[in-house]
Amino acid sequence: MSEAKNACVIGWPIGHSRSPLVHNYWIAQHGLDAHYDKEAVRPEDFEAFVRGLAARGYRGASVTVPHKEAALALADEADATARAIGAANTLWLEDGRLHATNTDAYGFMTHLDLSAPGWDAPPRPAAVLGAGGAARAVLAGLAERGLPEIRLLNRTRARAEALAGRLGSRVEVGDWDERDAVLEGCGLLVNTTTLGMAGAPALEIDLARLPDDAVVADIVYTPLETPLLAAARAGGLGTVDGLGMLLHQGALGFERWFGVRPEVTEELRALVVADLGEAAC
Image (cartoon, helix red, strand yellow):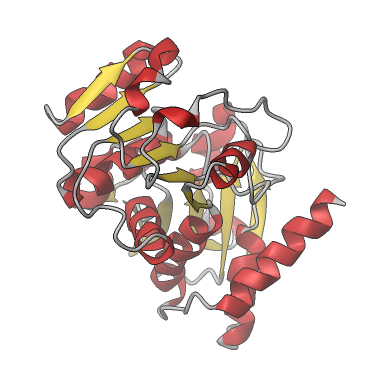
């Protein structure tokens, strides 16, 4: 592993990220001589930044929007999970080489199972909105679970079709304007777009089309309860916020950089929730 002590999260923009709060909590908990930073890096500067990780004192990094596909392309070695998803969210240096993986699918599915146990019994179609790096991970996790059909919609249809082509016939692409109709019969709706994030427009969709026992998940966690989740809760649907995905996927990255698997606890979640509340004030 690199002699560098620290790690960071790279994104553009990056102001919303709570990853430093999470990882520095774990660093303190395990008594490590390290810290975890937040790095705002423009897409045109991403390659140079990653090539210079060691020089900046970093042994690895989390990667978020919009860099996940570029991160995979830059890796000297990428594991099967990252290659299958087509995007990487975790980088680390080992023996002078840049390694990549993707922990998003694990983080999403772990949090979904813990927050809405039995959501996939019986297996029903799921609808996924978005076709970026996070959508790739969500789709991979759902496909591995064996759902009968995954309905994928993106504002740019061609991008959704390209993504569906990687995942096989189980993924059906629809037009963005059909997002209300495709909810019929779905046991799960997942928003992986930035719609509903603080400062972004809300996602407009008719949740009444979902079955009464459906679950709505949103990977956005700023705010913790997005307009989509608020509407789902008001309609009596199950809801899964984006914070748990962040925490569970982050634990795997932390282990890569620091050699110890941290625990996702209620205390940690409460710490982040409190920070999110303060930021909204």
